[in-house]
Length: 386
Image 1 (cartoon, rainbow, N blue to C red):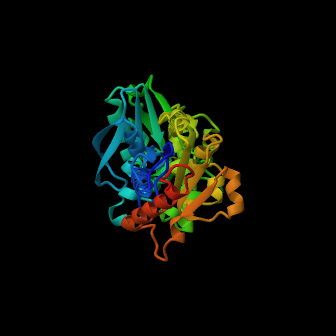
Image 2: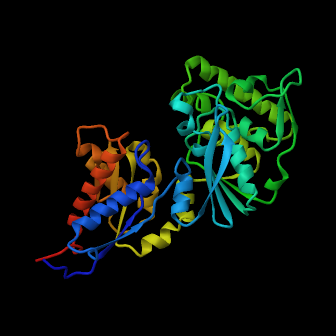
Image 3: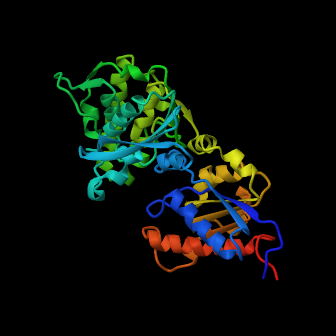
């Protein structure tokens, strides 16, 4: 068999498979399978573009696209030192909640809904400022705290005091004790464009706020949820009284993202954008897809939330008329729903094994290579012919 047709160029642009593989590892495994399906390595040309949507993996995606990686040590969500990375290309810095104060860096995966603080994220912001960026992307997904950004603002220079004038450490359990605030935000923030990258649209407080909606997944009991929601309202009043936040800011869509860090970022003057679309622009997706015949995207779970606008939906929307294939750990969509995202096919790891691959990187990579081979064999005109 010899190849008699021009090779297909495939853009592999996935998000991470949370708990299993990074976006880069997903792309690498699919590419290995695609190349193995061809009779020669020239039969399929793979362009790899690992993506993120402002959640965990945002720094890694930026580094994979050419940003430099910089390491710093910050105080983790419950006070332990954490080695965190930021990405920087000389103009734009990407700072991530997930690798500074996220669920992923909690010791022994022990949830701490009241004790967890966003202070480490603020310290990473300070470190990024030392590199003199003109723009900073604040990637907010994956937080372990519900402190309204109190810890972050403390790291940036504000001092929160209780009714006796005693200092408070930023955390969920400190919110209700906040009585006043002194100090000022680190002056180095002035003149830096702050971009709040999130696709969360919840307000800070109330039934659709940070504590009721996201608190349970961070370990909150019903009592914890009530305590945190009331504490967030108290925290807002302190900032408003001090002239550090506009009245009504807490009701803004996105203020409840990352346990309320979104609110603190908005108070600092950050501009909120769609995390998915912003990272597609930052990583030059449109130019990359214009040189390709086929786009493969994916994430850990493809479901109704994906249809509502998560990263694979944004990829599909911006891919034009070229064929779009999605790969996921699991898919809860019926085939007749694929057309809502203009997908020609959805492959799910769960259809290839009876085992749970969501926490098994080796099995996930093996199955992705298998799926890559199947995709490669299905590409018309891309493989060897008799």
